[in-house]
Structure formats: structure tokens, C-alpha cells
Image (cartoon, rainbow, N blue to C red; front, side):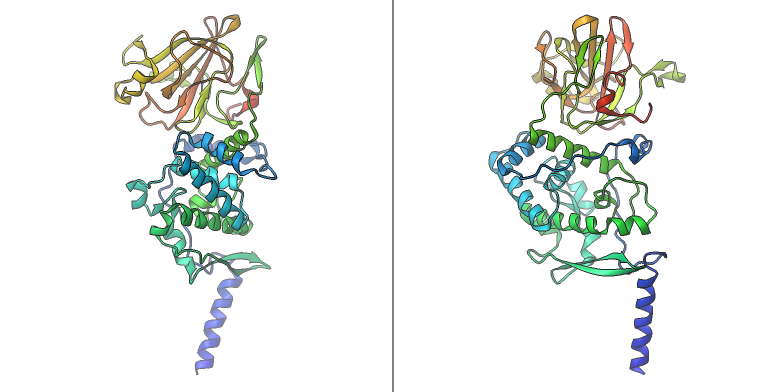
Length: 413
């Protein structure tokens, strides 16, 4: 009787595994990402994966000091000992689990901006540490120091295990730097091994990289988080390689350079898009997706003709020094927020709006690529962080997507 019962149970298990790849059932507890932070979903949905060029390879023969310095440039100011600790842990754990350290570091930046404490809102959502590991998603799959996952093979799901016995897997360990990056690297390595199988089985949205599964688990629902991480990775690689300035176009003979690092960057709203009451006002520039706090650069050499704030009401603009701008609340600003205007040679000018901070002041001279402020969402109510960029020739406005085409992924063109 016991043998019969055991045989019946075994038959059910085999059946579940055998239909796992082609059918609805899978032999594990589904990993489902919830409450994923997004800002510009509709814009990212317009972009098919084919519009993006191939992502750059990670540099070979990686130098730890250069990596540390590049990570510091990506993260911004932090104590030297913390930067050293982060860089060492990223390189160590990425090497242990054979994952791309630039990807792991980019995920760290995207999820925490390199800040060590997990905010209460993320703790309440079950996300902990520098990369906001969704502990409840993975906890059922970790037993006795092993993470069990499945890979499709010959029409069936085959169990695999990854040893993760260095630390206990729980929210307390996930909040600590070294254990956290240990588990983050391990989970990335698992999703990389599973990507093909998960993509074949689950009807997720088309995406470019396995990093999407970090946010959404088995079935990918959106691509915005993926695009954010890959943009941060391009920035980090550029800083590591010391890429510097490179020309992307011209304005009547005036060389033009990217306003943001880590190109190409996504256009989320286009020049001339009808706005205002009944759509009577056309969008005067383009909106480019970005991360709060990243550097915004002058697209060409020139002189600062305005650095300050758009205030509520018509024609209400006030010059500010960077220190004054830092003290101004978003609720006090008009729709343009903090912004900078630059006059260039040949009657050309550029305007950079919704900045988080100012790095220049009125009448400063700047070279192409100089930092004029940081990207933000000042003056906006609902929109996420982005750069509103305008270009003009004398009194005529120009579509910035034309001279900057080589630095953009533009689903509107």
C-alpha cells in the first residue's frame, strides 16, 4: 500500500515537472515582484528592445582602484572608507558568483543611490539593503544554505542548486553590506542562468536583459527598471574608462555634446507635443529620462545668462546662487523649477529645466561638458526625474532631438 502511494506521488511530481516548460504549472513557488518603483511607464512602453543599441562589454583586466574611483563618481560624495568598502565588496562578490561587477554596482546605485540605510517604505515592502533585495520573494527557495532554482531542459524543469551558506538568508543579514552584496550577486547569477527558460515559459513583456527579473521575478511586466540599471551601468563604464567628451552633432557649425552621461538616453516626451489647455501650447523642448542627482552638462561652450528659479505666475524668474537654490522648496517653484540658460556662439542658446541643484551662477563662462547642475524634478507635481532641454537660434526654437540624435533613443522619431 505504501509503495502504491509513493508511486502515485512520484507520478504527480514527474507530471508537474514534465509540463513545467510548456504548460502553466511550475515546480516552485512563483517569484512575483510587487510595488516596483516606476516614473515614466508609458514612455518606456513605447520603446521596443530593437531601438536600443547593444550594451557595452565590461572592461577586461579590471583595476580595483579605477573601479573604486568610477563608483565614487557614479555615487557622488561619500566617506572614503565607505566607498572602499562598497567597491571591495562588489568586486569580491561579483567574482565569487561570476557576475558582472558593473551590473551589480549599477543596481546598487539605482536602488539606493549608495545610501546604506533602507528607508521605512522599502522595509514595509520587504526590500532590504543596498540593492533592495526582495527577501520574501527568495526566502522560500533557500534551505540549509542552498538556493534551489529550475532550468528548462528537454521539455522539463530540472532542479539546480547554488550554495549560499556564507550567511543566513534573512532580512537582518540582507541589511548589512557584505552579506547583502553576497546574496545580491548570487541572485543575479541565478536569474542569468534562468533567463532563457523564464523567457520561454512566461509571457512577459519583451526585454533586453535578465536584470528585469530582479524586479519582477519570474514574469517581467515592465522595462523601465531594466533601462534605469543599464543606463547607470553605461555611466559607470564610461567613468571607469575615462571616456570624456565626444561630439554627437552640430548646430550651424557649433559642436554639440551630450547633456547627460551614459548615452544613449531615452526621450520621454517630444518637441512640439501639444500641451496646455486644449493642447494649444507645443512642448518647447524634449524631456530626457534620468536619475535624480546625476550631473547635467552644457551641450556647448558659452556664458550662463540665467541660473535660478521659475516662480509661480507669468514671467516670474529669480536669479539664485547655488546655496540659495538648495534652500528653496519645490512647493515655492513654478513649473520650470530650477533652471539654467546658456548663450552659445552663432546666436544659439540652450535651457536646462527641473534641476535638483545648481552648479553655476549668472554670467559664469562654461566649456562644453561642464557640469551646470544636477538632474531632478523641481517644479513638477507628478512627473519623475528628467531633464527638460530646449535649444533656440535667436528667437526660433529648434528640436533638440535633431543635433543630439546620436546620443538619444527616441521612440517619437
